[in-house]
Amino acid sequence: MSEIKIHFKLTVDEDGYPPIGIESLNGDLISEGVAKIDNTPFFVEGVALGDVVNVAQINESNRKNYQFIDVEENSDNIALSVLFFEKEVGDIVHNYFSIKNHYCEYGHFPGFSMLAISVPKSEYTNEISLFLDELQEQEIISYAELSI
Image (cartoon, rainbow, N blue to C red; front, side, top):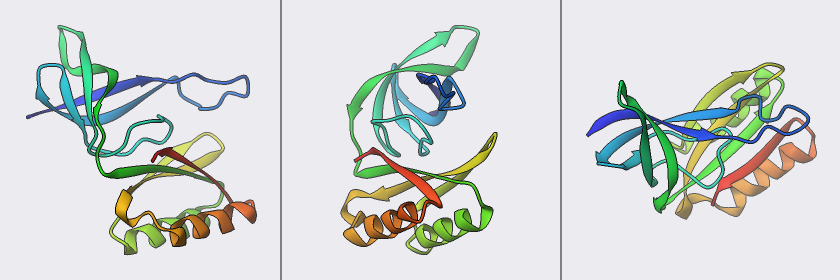
C-alpha cells in the first residue's frame, strides 16, 4: 500500500465556513483508483476513518495527491466534528474520547479550534450523545455527526 493525500472540495458559505475550500485526508492506496481513509475529517461529510473510497490521481507529476470521487464501502466508524473556543473545553472533550480509546485529532483555525473524532458505530451510545448535547446546550461547543 502507498500513503496518499485524498482531497475533498468543500463549499464555503457566505459566513466563510468552513474556513478552507479543500480538506485533505490521509489514505492508503489499496489498488488503482481505490484508497482507504486513514484519519478523520473536520469538515467533510459522508466519510469516516476506514472507509474505502474511489479516487482519481490529480496529476502525473505528484503521485501522492488524489481527488475524492465517491465512497465504495463504509467502515464501521462514525465521524464527529467538535468546534470549541476555549482550550480547556477541547481538553475535556479530548480526554472523554481518549479514555474510551477513540481516535481524536486537534485542528486549529482562525478564531476557533476543533476535534475530529472517530467512534466505532457499535460504541456510539446515548451516553456519548448526551455528553455532547449537554456541552452544546451550555454553548461551549458545537458538534456535528459528519458520517453516521
